[in-house]
Image 1 (tube, one colour):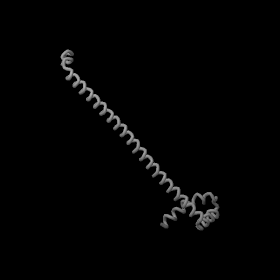
Image 2 (cartoon, rainbow, N blue to C red):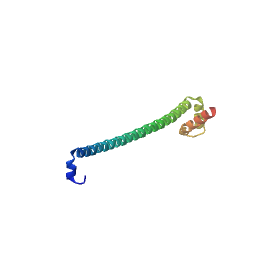
Image 3 (cartoon, helix red, strand yellow):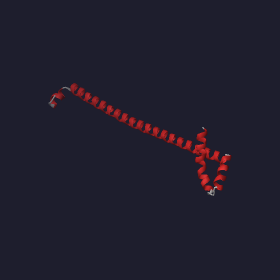
Image 4 (tube, helix red, strand yellow):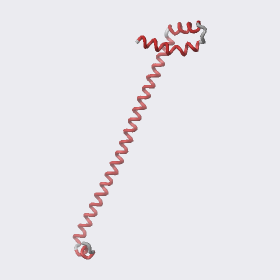
Length: 118
């Protein structure tokens, strides 16, 4: 096998060896391709999971923000609609304070009243 003459003298052995080599090479290439495809698949999966979690986090944060904003708006609206707000404003104005103080004080007062009520 070491001498090229002995290898050439057995053409069947030579073809068998080359076939085996080719087979091994193709198997190695296909295995490498599979690993490459798998790594690409994993990378894609990682990206997908990352974006999914990110979008869920953003969605949850936006939901929280919306809930807070809605609560503040509801509180302000109930303050403005509430007759107690008028009473409070007249008390604030009667006390010689600027009406702006009454306006800034209202939501806190309103919310605390609502929390006490509920």
